[in-house]
Image (cartoon, rainbow, N blue to C red; front, top):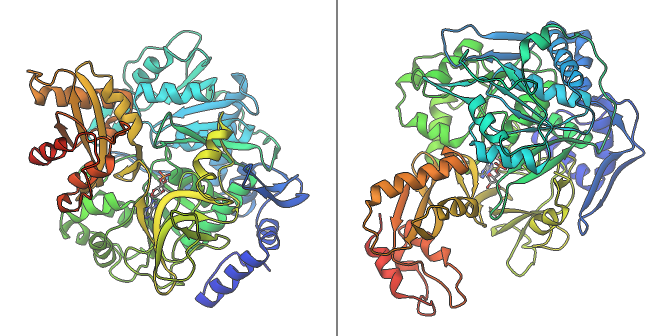
Amino acid sequence: MSNYHIKHLEEYYQVYRKSIREPENFWEEIAEEHFLWRKKWTNVLSWDFSKPEVKWFEGAKLNITENCIDRHLATRGDKTAIIFEPNNPTDKAEYISYKQLYERVNQFANVLKSKGVTKGDRVCIYVPMIPELAIATLACARIGAIHSVVFAGFSSKALSTRINDCDCKMVITADGSYRGNKTIDLKGVVDEALESCPGVKNVLVAKRINSKISMKVGRDFWLQPLLDSASKEGNAEVMDAEDPLFILYTSGSTGKPKGMVHSSAGYMVYTAYTFKNVFQYKENDVYWCTADIGWITGHSYIIYGPLANGATTVLFEGVPSYPNFGRFWEIVDKHKINQFYTAPTAIRALAKQGTELVEKYNLSSLKVLGSVGEPINEEAWHWYNENVGKKKSPIVDTWWQTETGGIMITPIPYVTPTKPTYATLPFIGIQPALMNENGDELKGNQVEGRLCIKFPWPSMARTIWGSHQRYKETYFSAFDNMYFTGDGALRDEVGYYRITGRVDDVIIVSGHNLGTAPIEDAINEHPAVAESAIVGFPHDIKGSALYGYITLKDAGESRNHKNLSKEINQLIADRIGPIAKLDKIQFTEGLPKTRSGKIMRRILRKIAHNEMDNLGDISTLLNPDVVQSIIDNKL
Ligand code: PRX
């Protein structure tokens, strides 16, 4: 019997040790006993981090949708797979059973095929949080097309970059989306993006807000009539274990976004196994993750992990503040949510509203509370624990990344004693290492360093689409034979991990990864701007917010700084999306630079953090005087 479900701390340690001592036997047992394979593997694992190359379950054949849907039909056909909770609380929720999901995914898959999409083709999915988003994703997986879901809050420029980077031949979208009391013209964004995407042959459009949109003849098609005439039956494409399942873009500290490529078999096994344990999911529980499917959290823990376990997963279209800040708690009460998974930024925003709205609803169904995407601060942790969990529901602070595919460091609820702000222990099979800047591993406890992973795990991204070299440089070059996460972490006296934050130029704003370079590139496009540097600074709700130091071409620029700031933020919203707007913009006469001309972001970061007495030696700078003037004019 494999250890699919861990229930005690001793069991965790025992299974963990086994997963490290004999990883191949361990994962083979999990894979063999809990999934549906068309053909078994010939080799469990081969790997070489120097190339880097990692293959799990080589030789196996499968389709992830048969694992997420078909195999449940006999025992769970009428069970609800997806609960769709719409933006407007007075609209009816929709309950999609596994049987209905099977039929709708097949219909969608048949539409894709009828439009010429075949195995290996890339399909861009730019759809709001409505059932079609999950169904389109699964339909791609069913026919072996590689889905590239782009968060439907990205701008047309960001969308076109992602479409072109992986040569998508189709875009799936909607006429528009609801967001609180606003509507967003999604099709307009797509039309604008497609002006520079010659490879896109067809656009399928779901009807959501019934707005008037333009449809390009021969290219654009309303989805529903096509679905209505498509068959509800269809065979899943048989995929190789290592065939790409999807591409998902994540920001890098430099350059264009990185299209992380995830495989079929390893991703399935690991997301399913982590879902079962990290949320202690039991049959008939109702699980809700508030993330958008446009991010990895939604891929792994709204769609694939839950459905592979035959779970009921909630898909929420709205926002926590509409029609008021009680919306999350109302939904927990309404659907009797058992596991609730959200981001610290949402918790902080809700905590700010006080406790009245939380107390108004019955939250007694809750058994597990999750946190993801950024460090959770102590205050938010306690608020969540006391007011939402009533000190009865363990908080799982789950650390992981787009690149890791699944949760890596986390407590297992009712198993691992929690500690505020600590992600605690590595999950089964995960071998973390803390490294110093000289490349030595810091052994023992009570150490702090750069967080790496020493051994492959099944759901790790296999490459960056179109640039294996960049994959190698970004993740496997900082330390020999290690995957480098880009995060710093400490290990306390009992071996618990606490993530201390990014050690590169990625800033996490409201749980979203933002690279500083692409934002600076956008700002520098403004004709009045000479140079810019972005750093993060602590923010009550967002965790971190962006502080921009900007120098103008004409130092005596007479234009109103307020208007300029607005124009710059508009430019950022157009190029990347509103999430990347700056909270503070300081116009400066210069930026501190080394003698070789490199901007000293470290100093700017300290100033933004109000750590002026701790700037270090600035006398070696090219322009030390500029530092004082920046401090004097700090916002
Ligand atoms: O810095 C870490 C932070 O989010 C980064 C990964 O972001 P992304 O790829 O967008 O994936 C987010 C959802 C998995 C990490 O490098 N991060 C994520 N979870 C935590 C975290 N930082 C601290 N604690 C966490 N629980």
